[in-house]
Amino acid sequence: MSSKGFTTCLWFDGDAEAAADYYVSVFKDGKIGRIGRYTDAGPGPAGSVMVVEFEINGQKFVGLNGGPEFRFTEAISFQIHCSDEAESDYYWDALTKEGGQEVACGWVKDKFGVSWQVIPPGAIELVSDPDPGRAARATAAMMKMKKLDVAEMRRAAAGE
Image 1 (cartoon, one colour):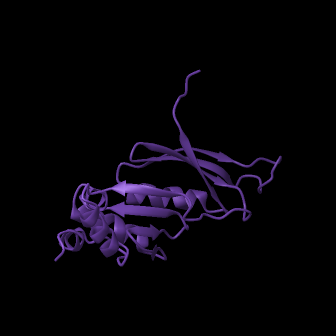
Image 2: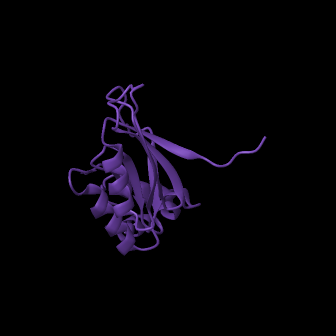
Image 3: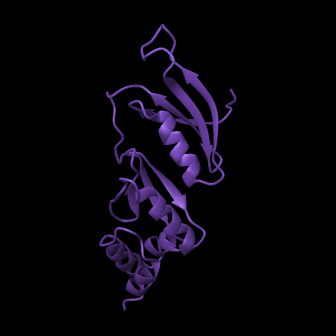
């Protein structure tokens, strides 16, 4: 049995196309694909967007206008592994603007309710340090943060 990869389907309540447009504006390599519309067969109004395909950072998504039955939760999130502090700042700012929310420990919720983890370089290494004392101190520092401050996590890991 072979697979042709995975596509993540995100369920929206009427704003799938706006969400796709937003994500491709935040992730500069993003692109919109096919858009499917409801027909007279329903269940949505004929001509309205049913699904919109888009791709960001090489990951394929489908935004589905499925209705109000389901909402996003933090049980599912997307990790953005940033290459430097400037990139981390960019994604943090882009995803929290226009109604997005800072959450905790590097997590944000964008204006559509989708959760993201903005991970600056070095953060994962600090909380998974082979020295359990260093890892515990870095993790304790991280637990007090919204946006991750790797310099502060390093100081904490070192016991400063």
